[in-house]
Image 1 (cartoon, helix red, strand yellow):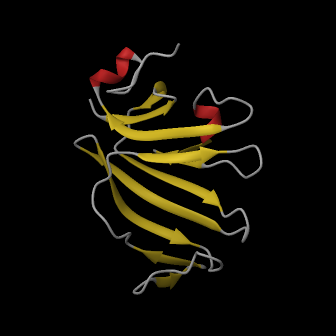
Image 2 (cartoon, rainbow, N blue to C red):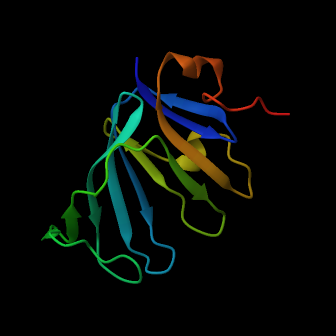
Image 3 (cartoon, helix red, strand yellow):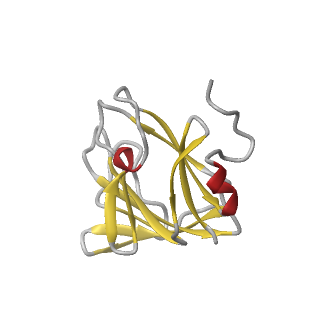
Length: 140
């Protein structure tokens, strides 16, 4: 079974049995929502679609984006990603992770320290039951 693993410091905090998910957040300066859709394929994360509800500093929609229902829609450039690293901070809004019609804040899905930290998102399978991502050292 393939799914999405969420890890902090190499330790898996959650494995979600999903193949499609959306990662959303609010830009810390512009206060504009950004959404990216991914599909887990062969343990890689494939960008499928993205939406941004406006433009601003460093957030211009790419060429070819279409304005629909108040957001710029486009297909992200690039191919499969081995992982995504996102920083959760007490000073900015948390990321929202949505799959199968349900959404949760990313920090609620993993054991996140109060001061925040980096969450690794990657495709995974049976190896996730060991609790560590491949190549990660056990916590000291």
